[in-house]
Image 1 (spheres, rainbow, N blue to C red):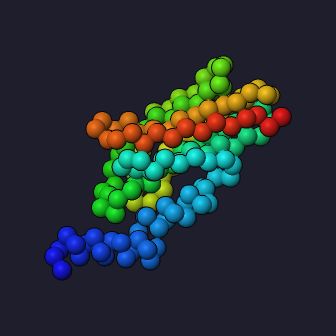
Image 2: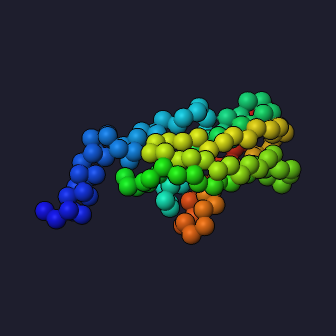
Length: 144
């Protein structure tokens, strides 16, 4: 077996056995890091996930990211997390640069007021130049 094929076969076997991030990713999407409603983007170099918790007139959005490749080298990655009330005011925007390791890494959080009867929308995306888009958007309604 040639070396690249052997590395690929070993990586696939380790991922199936649960020893590499790909396996952690499968369980992460099934069980989000925070309770609430979540959405995930599987495109690009990293998998981005955004979750929302709504309590009365308060909403909190949490973002996290996981590399898609077993050959990932931990590095700083820039992100943008934005949240707004649909048809209304911006809840907030953060642009953190996060050191992304081999496993799920928290990206940031935005909290704010969500008036009764309204919907909030948040988007998490990487802003690394040259990377394919991996944006994920989530909308949630006020529960009051």
